[in-house]
Image (cartoon, rainbow, N blue to C red; front, side):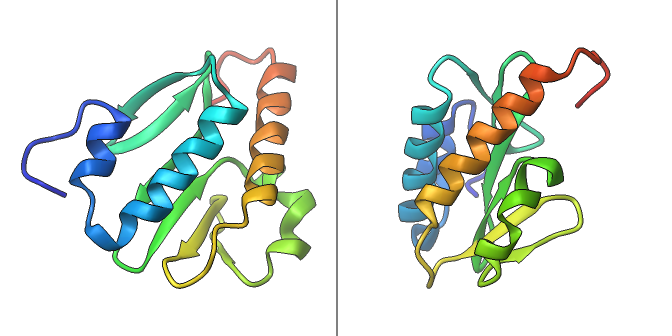
Length: 125
């Protein structure tokens, strides 16, 4: 990332390494389509969608983009995501040499929105 800290998601994508921009741009479009009313912000140096609590985030890394939702949103789709690495904390790693599993990302994002909408616990994320 450039030395100037991005303040918006488009600035984050613009400042990202060239090899990550296509994946970041597509992931951003998918998530905006799923959560058009969510607040878009940069937290901890990463793009976040919040409504009113954390929905999902994404980030550029050396060899992949990370899509962060939650394990409970990812769990129903793990068998369909076996070609991708998923961390213990619920980060889906999408290598730059693999396509973004767009339909699954949409389903995971929608599941996360339902989960957050069903939670009344203000301490959740």
